[in-house]
Image (cartoon, rainbow, N blue to C red; front, side):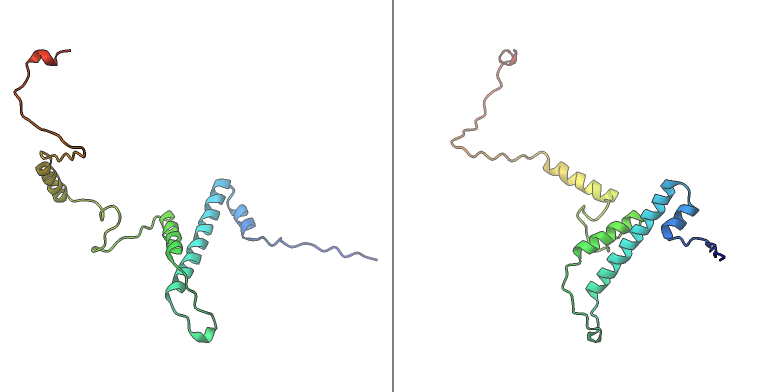
Length: 145
């Protein structure tokens, strides 16, 4: 009896095996893998955000989900920031830090207003009675230690 010897063809590799074959440096492999993971999270969060704002037709039979998209939006913008994309506000909107950088004219106006209010000082005393009187300056001997 003759035994058949099966010759194995080239092994089928998964995506990670192909990545290892193409890129030999482990740091580059991790960088590529992390890019794919971030892309996956970006696609997932973008899909969830899209589903949160559109109404699906009733023919699909998928019930409408009531969810707060705040967390998903923060994940989406966070992943976008890792790719170097930053969201911008419209001109009329202001964010938490005052709406961006100040112009030179704005800084000069702030300094002028601060200098006008700086000479005045308000002191509030909670305990009474307090008497404020004016007296002549004392001699220099009393201030020496």
